[in-house]
Image (cartoon, rainbow, N blue to C red; front, side, top):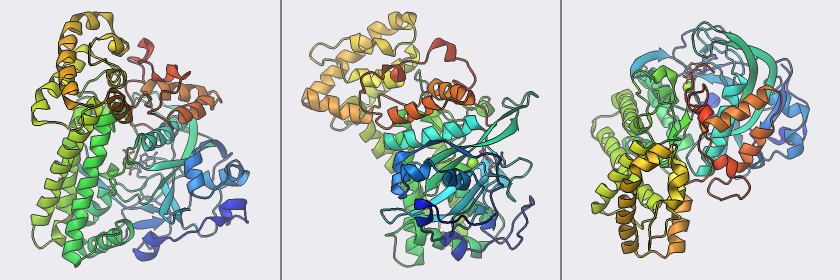
Length: 528
Ligand code: AMP
Ligand code: MG
């Protein structure tokens, strides 16, 4: 693969590849699958594809990288971000990490199909890693092919951008490129493998380091390299953390715990279920990362998991995500313990997780309900609401949006009717909801907020538009027929999720009946 001749703005991308410069790499240059010791990464080239073609791109991410629309639409862009060419300065590599999967230590995992091209500096001077997902095998591919299918790539592309615009910490997506090749997948692991279209997403984040990058070094007893990776991470990715080595590490761990809590509180606010919160899918920056069998809450159900692999234990269900995040932080703490002279700073970090989560959830609950802040006495009101919502299977997004329209002077169920999936449930729970609304209205009036301010506060916390599972599936169905228009339209709708956007009501509707039990709409497999 030869570096590309100057191509417009692409050639203007500036790289500063700190990870490969400052950390030890695997001396073996072969792409063969193997265990990699004493190294944080392996250098590996993307495997070229037959016919790279740009399907979608994020205008905000492109602009932040200084890439014009013309560049994005050029053949050169598709060639580079389809893995067929490099721009001068790119130094591709796959990272070595391990992880706890579904509660068990899984050993070495690593970037099995993700290849970082390099660390570029964006127009605001911030470091951004450009990483291709689905760019071919690496030493960490184990038995798999290193590729990604179009459907899962569309889901990652759309959801990471949607999450950003919702104000949820997340990795971003620059581009979605079709490879012109097929990939064989057995979507439900039932012996029905079939060829699917392949694609590559370019993900963008200041760092793709995961909890698992530290865990693998600890598991192998490589304390010296573990310390190096921690110091590197603090230096590169956590500007502002200073003090002596012990103080820095303590503050860093606490920051990781705090950011993880903030991230999860946002997930609960917007109704996002990650689906595979394994420790290799936990970003050290507290960003939502690795969009696989994730899902969005339609009818409110804390017990729901979108992931078919998780169906039996429902470990990663909506309502358990905070506990799992905490469990994952405990695994990170275990991995780091050899670097600390006492466990007190690790315990303090974990305590910070609990406190931050409480404070964030309290603030977000208040915002969702339109209160200035939650009071100690609000527990019953809030608990009753979530119980009612679950019993009546109301649509979470539509309900909270409708709640802002309730007239506190004469509260009625009228603005909330749309949130009910069935007339039976509405009839059965209507009186209980009316009693709840009366109590809510009293509490909200007591807050003394002007009606317009209350509505504005609620509508800034309760999105009107989220990437409903069935909408993503519709975009996928069309794209598989060669029509990417719904991807573009959804991306555009989701750029302003808190605005009413008249004329786009169809994207705010309840999940239709046909989607209730359809694959891709209510259950997702890890096969991607
Ligand atoms: P995930 O569950 O998607 O986070 O993936 C867990 C591990 O499997 C990671 O190390 C991935 O890189 C790897 N992996 C998943 N899919 C593939 C694939 N198609 N080819 C190679 N490695 C993969
Ligand atoms: Mg992963």
